[in-house]
Image (cartoon, rainbow, N blue to C red; front, side):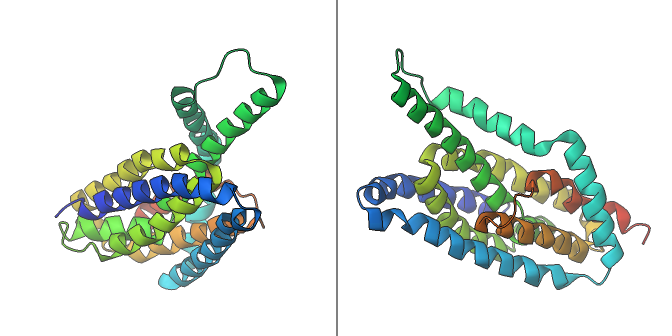
Length: 248
């Protein structure tokens, strides 16, 4: 069934986000439990790096991957995709977070902090769930097989459930929950494109996977706090192998 994997994926993100809202209240009541979300995220980040390293070995066309990363990052930086995502997150905050009148200075600071957390939760969950081999290859496999192969997306759904739970409990459930919108659009578009361009994509799937996997490594490093790479600005690189493989 087409889009089944993506639908299941969105449902698991929603479930993880809602569970995270409940657990955040539990974590806040205990200093010892409050460190659990951060500890779990560090574990997830290491797993994400491992997936990225493994997937980056998928292709032998190193020049295609290198050019895709460089050109794609230049394009993404020129467009400033990272800023666009931040703005969208802020826009959604204004819709869901109501400012209380006559706030005291301390309350106002807490309100601002809460808004930033929602934005961070939205952007972090969106990037984690959208970028990478599982997202791209899962949607590609589904599109290329007419919806028969959903294994990768089902595997990704389990990981995204944990990711949404942790981000929701850390930054706020609304931000994590809203990420199902870009996830559905992103994976759905890839699946539709793969179905329409199946003949063309068969020759560059490994290069697309390897490029996306390197971006996953960068994402994992960001999650550990080791780097502050603007991952969203690298997203165009994932699609450039489709063009470059025609000439290399």
